Image 1 (cartoon, rainbow, N blue to C red):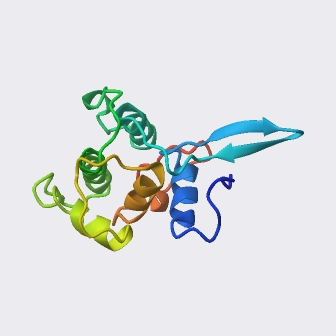
Image 2: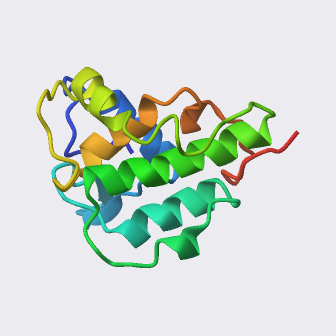
Image 3: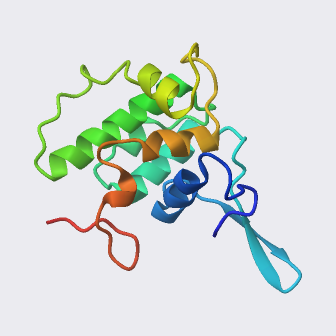
Length: 156
């Protein structure tokens, strides 16, 4: 890091770097000469099980087995998984969180605010960059959680 395929002037550069640092969304290192370059592939889609694995590695209470499919991730499915992770993060720190009723359609508001997209279908595939922006917009932002030197969450 930083990812070489997301430029610092990109609107979501910071979100991409932060989510990469959490390990939820991983990049790919490629040797180039004597150095390595790390790529994020911001405009690529992501599979459900890839996000589930990243969320589980970050929050061990996340039920990754609930999302075993290699299906490409849609916006609405990504939001469902993000809401579930939010539930576990909030519960862990003692914040009451009615899951999932109060947040199930909130993705439309976030899409408009964070991604500047007005009319969007939940069935559209989400890009890795959009997913990073969604995750970075959360009240219980993964980047704000306390972690140890190995990147594991520190439980109080």
